[in-house]
Image (cartoon, rainbow, N blue to C red; front, side, top):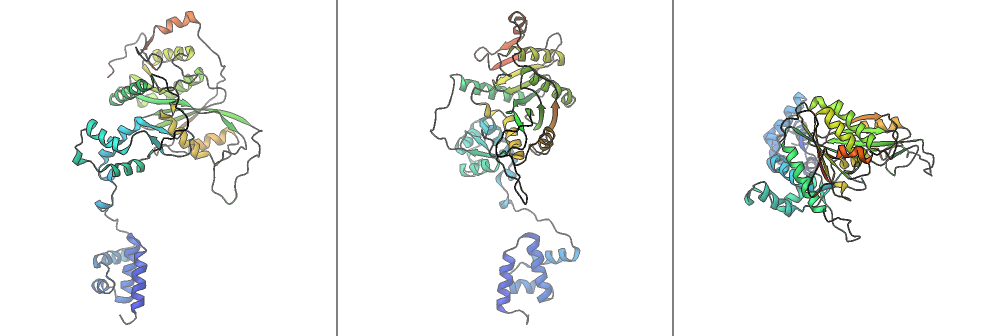
Length: 407
């Protein structure tokens, strides 16, 4: 005690306040050993520290092992204390969310406010008002879970067709039915813009002593890749297939064929594929070559194919777009000088904690391939279109093979 002055005691108290957890415990225990012979009660009297904490710190110093802290319930986030509530919120918000159209962040933007989410929890998930936290807390939960509310700016009118709302309702209904059905697998597919290869700046940043040096003019392009993505929505497994030719209906179907051949062993019980997609040129519900290849795919594998399209100008709501957003952020600071570099970079990204499956499609594809009108009449008979939304909801049943009962 004679070695400790009042100023020293105050300095040690302030030093302890700057620490937390095991580091603070061990500091307080070391002070007790150095100045007070390891007396926990006396240390508590002099410094105001808990003698139980000091005893714990002394034990850690003797054994060299850190005792895990027990989380205090008050320190835990609401979604940690009530994971079912977090899942129910996710189920409500996910269909109303979109990725950043410019792929400049990992946040997903949602159209639902915290107040609307709280109301939906009561009406759709059967929570009572007393069970739910305040809407401010729900807003904080949404931010932590990666859903950000974006302010609507009155800059330009949104392109919208008269069927947009009905299409969204149809997408939401079919997706929910598929997710609840054990014999149905929902995937989200789309191609990304052609990737130019070379010493080209992607306007990103990378960590290093010196900045990467790219050409001042993006003129010397050494090659290109056509990325196509298939996301297994519920499991989060993301497959990226890189083509070296063009994005055509045949390229898309070759990607689907290769994906299913490699993944079907994981889904022996699946009888239906629900495919979320947009009405791009190669994927359109009116594209004859695409529909022909899908009918052949359904017959070959004995699967019911259900095409569920998002409305025009709203493809950003398609789940696979979020995978593209993460990939763009992952490699935007790198110089993708050749195909192998781009492919290896893609392999190191993670989607929901899972690295993607990355493959290369070597085929050469011609544009403008169509099915003649007479031949397409046979294909047309195999298509079952929604009575009001025929172009955006198409079902293909497998021919000459019983497919079993689907939910």
